[in-house]
Image (tube, rainbow, N blue to C red; front, side, top):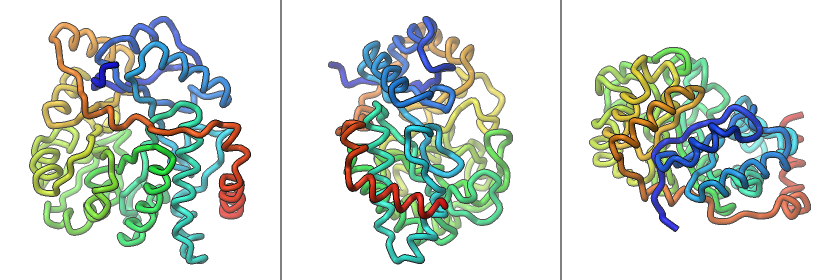
Length: 336
């Protein structure tokens, strides 16, 4: 089996595959699919859907945002997870930060058992009390606590065979605007960012299998957002900071990625150094992009193969696991 992956991660609209979905997934330039709540009805349905997808193409990464709290796409059969901020408060009061390893293991084990490869987590943004989108998605306002919590969390992910993705590089917690609907602008200088926002990313960089770039314009660093910036990705993240893992763009259909067409945004991301770009809720854009990539014979990516899950526990075994039962009791206590 080839280890090369397409560089496009797309989405689908429903709980089963349409003929158009199948055609797009089959395209060699599609290497990933991101799930949303609209794709989920039950464990059985989702497992069947993902088995179907992987029967069409083995070299495809199935991803989801299953952070907990406000950002939890799969519910119902899956364990309800409080926000990372709520869990940090519990850990601090009980002097039990290792609970994050257990939670990272549980979330990752549930996802892997259904066929998911990637959970886009942990959030490494520092909550500075002025972000409309981050807030309690952040572990803390305290950098050292973010490092401690996320490090344990990733240990749990890795034990469950799932790779980590730190987001949103170089930090989204210091701007008010929501990059889903507008472009935030941060005027901090690079040295200030390195001494503050970037600290959590660098403190655990050897545990980070991937990084997702933020759609924020750091106007005193570069004229492009990180996903489109050779300076941010190559000169700063790779060369200056020494990071060598996988790099994802955030969703290129977000307003923060600008008004250009998807082909232009894809090209800028790949040329800047992203390994894979994410495109959601823009089916026409995806179709046009794939036609463009086919016509111009763009290459594939071998580096992405490291993001494939390496282990999975069965759903039934997980339900009966005393470890999982214990963690769920604690989570119910936190969330009550």
